[in-house]
Image (cartoon, rainbow, N blue to C red; front, side):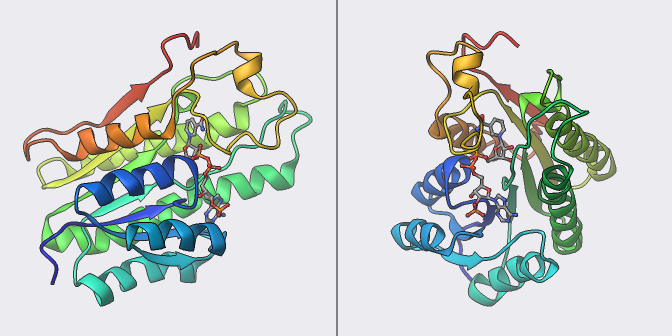
Length: 236
Ligand SMILES: NC(=O)c1ccc[n+]([C@@H]2O[C@H](COP(=O)([O-])OP(=O)(O)OC[C@H]3O[C@@H](n4cnc5c(N)ncnc54)[C@H](OP(=O)(O)O)[C@@H]3O)[C@@H](O)[C@H]2O)c1
């Protein structure tokens, strides 16, 4: 068994997930990375000497594999970073319903199922940390992002209920709520939010990765249930 802590990171092929993997790799964590795009994922994993599992996270087999592989390779698992996600934009009356379904399945259902699975491992050990990459949109709403906000509000509610259920144990749950971060998340948008919101200096993925490390690097008695991180000029 390795002495290093082992972290499973979803959505590690790009953006925030990739940056979190880089940050934790620097800190000597062993990593299990997952995403759909095998080429991009393998490149990140090779650079960081991490284990990778390519597949769609809405697939139950992929979800089950993450913990299994962590034990096969390292005989332990300490941290789950629920980061994989997508955004479907549009007014409530005109949004593409197929995209909304896909978004709910990855942002909410897959995250919930992973929490459910990992708790079965964390509870008997009385140890572990789950970090959900939520969003500032998990605490506020705006026109045309109501459906996305709904998925992040769901993640926040689930996390808060779980925090109450876990109080008194040594298992921690945290939500990280970024504002606009420069990643591929908005690649299909006609007008990038950076333009529509007039943000000249948005967050970078490394800003969020550093906060993940901050959350993890707390004494045992300190819990950080939620932390919001915004670009200074983000008027939201
Ligand atoms: N960027 C922002 O402004 C912002 C702000 C607040 C919160 N967030 C949240 O941050 C998280 C990461 O997003 P990001 O900004 O880093 O965007 P990103 O660069 O598009 O990364 C999203 C990641 O999720 C993976 N993914 C998406 N659908 C998946 C699926 N069905 N199965 C497996 N993996 C899937 C993608 O990999 P593949 O495509 O290879 O599967 C990718 O690795 C998301 O939860 C997002 O909601 C982002």
